[in-house]
Length: 300
Ligand SMILES: Cc1ncc(COP(=O)(O)O)c(C=O)c1O
Image 1 (tube, rainbow, N blue to C red):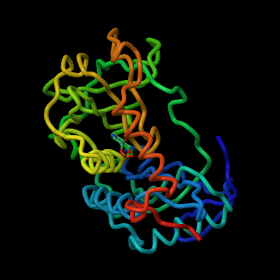
Image 2: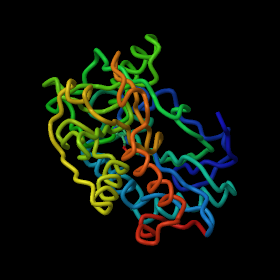
Image 3: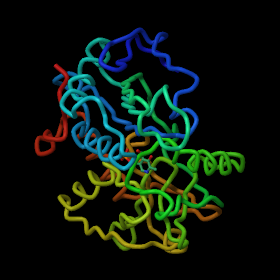
């Protein structure tokens, strides 16, 4: 782990090693926390955070589903993220805000347990270190929408992602792909998916998946580039005959997929539309596209 100096915990900056919690923290036992993954990039005008407001808004929405009262406002947490970056004198990092039911009460009704909030950050390079990846459709399906609200980013949900990841990594693949309960393509363990067929960009509708902020960005960028975008239910076999495919997410950014199960996509080569979207996305996060500067929060 690439440690930094300070972590923001419940309103104070503490030393990395001292950001500790009690063994009987509610969220440790039951997954009753909500979190975000955000990235900060080096630009010509200093470090800038990509779509911070949208990430914090999603954090607060996730908290609402868990009936969690976050003891800070969105504005206060925005300031805290900036303060933590400055305190660590870091230009480029992955940021992990988390709010969780803490220590003070056990049992499955979390109300009454104190809510803690933390912000840690550290340098985290490419999440999937290859230029393009091989993906396997997992035997584990995405959580049923009547079991959990899919649009919330809740800590406990990620056990589903962990099972899928362990399963496919054992079989030599780089990443998993989960279907939904109806057998349609849902998403990766921590990514949304896109495919290209006959120059049209397709992505699963927001039914059983997380509403990814990178997904939203790519849809907007594609439309601006006059690429037709369609959100729909996608069958695994439609994905396998796609011309191109890629994952999106804060951790993976835009990550080309060139193999699904045993099927090569585009004969194993990264496709042109994928490359174009990846290139524009990379310019945007580095502050090189004027039109999209509104997506960046500059630290200095
Ligand atoms: C399950 C899941 N799907 C999709 C994503 C991509 O979302 P975003 O682009 O907001 O990082 C993530 C990451 O947060 C995720 O955990």
